[in-house]
Length: 266
Image (cartoon, rainbow, N blue to C red; front, side, top):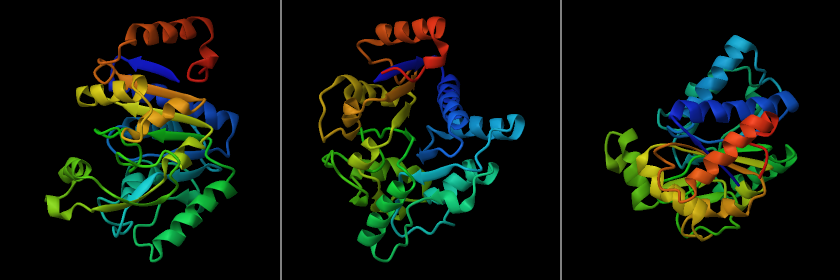
């Protein structure tokens, strides 16, 4: 696990976009796992700019999103498909048939989840998975207590997650109580993982996930077991890390000695 503490959220987003760009240049047909939420928006903005201004090509890319609310249509303004269209898909040359977002109106949810897992396998697995982290340490919608071997499934959201997401809806009652989500085990099968966090509100849980014990109560802590994870945080989100000086020193040494390996050495 490599920890990069950026000075600002903008720098954090740029570093993540640099890593994704390098992946696409190495493998134009890369399979990307994508996240929603405010944290990755800056990274998506960077990728859109690079596509429009520098020709970064997404024509062969395949995407799989982490999750989607149950019973929200793709056209609903708070659905994650709508979010992705608005912030990324509508602005790059990704082939629509290569876009995969869990379908909130799936009739047979269990069958759909099995199909989603099979689609990931048919695509050759996820090359780079982007993640955020919830206030309680969840990744995707793998709430506290989720099995660290879990697969794509229907998940009941916690009160905290519902309350955290209420700001996007007119009132608390409108927030969905269920979501289809990739499991922790599914996420851990990605070849490479980038997890992003920003803001002082995430500082304690970031430290717990990175430097605390591996536990199902903090699903992000399972990333400690993955062989190639890059954690990119801004200064506020990294403020509670006990070994922050060491992480900064490693990053500076890599920039000075082997810039081509930034984000690739674990």
